[in-house]
Length: 324
Image (cartoon, rainbow, N blue to C red):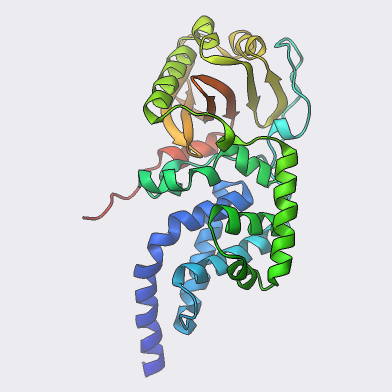
């Protein structure tokens, strides 16, 4: 084997060791931009393949992390050229405030926003999840979908990841003035969209888990009174791929009681998604979907129920044990 080929193989071996620790944060970056954990995982695989092939030519003029973000961001931007934004039902129409309101038919043609498991985005490290929590909140990721692809990239690189303007300009092969202009427009668009999750007063981790456990118990037992005691007066329920959504404690509890609950049907397993309390849902033992709770104080503000059995595998698949 020629010496250049041997050096390239040695370099690629080093790449695997040096680059792997960045995989969870790169996955979170791709997820924020795409709104799909399935697409994000596929894209991160592509990013690592591209980086592995290019690594022998990496000259170290930036850090390896910055170089990987350059590849990841450009790969995502290319992918977004052919993809529509991923909404939630609350981003498409007005809510119903009476649980007897007819439910609109499912919208299979819409690619809906997906939740993302903390275990993937934080690599099993709770500190990593906490550090990046503001940037993976479900409401924040949903709001990002209102932005153009370039604005999403600029805002996440600057405001979530903390890259300097000059670094973002280099990553995107543009000017600092263009970055600042895109950032101003992105911030203004998000502000017009309304408050996002990190602006809410959340309970601490222990209180949040206790509230989740009480919710799981009430839902499993189909106890409407117990559920009402957990909901804020302005609570919201949305259930993609159903475009209809409901607002108000009475509407949410009434819908669940009359249209969803039945004896011995539902099994909920507590988990975490998007830095928030969540539950894996099985219906009569079969995968059904994921529910993510938005908490405000000691009450539940929003229940987002993703009715997609394919999502369950992301929350239940075995993960490699940490070494050491």
